[in-house]
Length: 299
Image: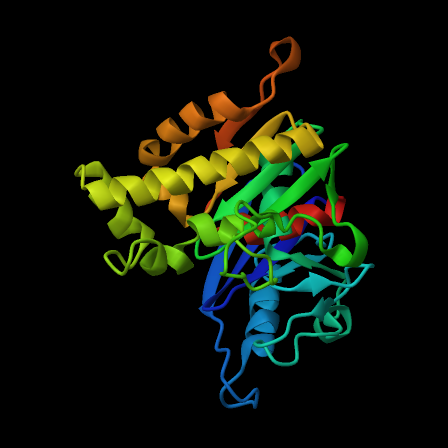
């Protein structure tokens, strides 16, 4: 059995793939709305049924028996990766839900940022790498750790929350984990308005201003990139990865991000005996969660 199903439960969309789990080749893919209603009742919240429909539809695309189903979701999974143990605030009913019983097939559940790392580790920018890190730069900043060739989840499956390290301990702005001056606060899309004194609303607008040479945009953007570089150098000191992979929507800035980032990273990285950590863009984008969830079945 080499085929597997991966499903990514996102805030607005559910993405599913049928893949060859040996090669990562996508054999079929589906997208449906999440339908996470505010009350959790059957009329306003149908995401469980949508996941079941996605799994059934993908299973009908093959005549082979599948290895199982991998499910990527927000929150912290249980130690045995059979359910999400902690996800307060939304997706009512997700915590503790037994997906294997519901779908009638073996299901492994993991955090969505960890799933993105698994996609890169098995088939993408971290393939054949023993020690690597991944950061997802978007509305917030997520991440994952690849240690000795395996996803490291840590105690209570919390490892890899790399966006919640601090770059300014004196900040009066705690992030969602109560860390002051976090990396997520420094570069996440969610704080662009505050960082730019209300001038820009999104990272896209901020980067456009930087490209046009606007002084405020330039100052805000390069400050954020410098803080990202310091964070990456700090993480390199802590974990000594071969490669650091960067993904997420902010990576659409491309050279406007990578060129100054590499300049700052060259200044701050500790390089005994000319050792150097490679910075690399993620191979996968929108489908990383679903692909990584399927890949996790082999981990």
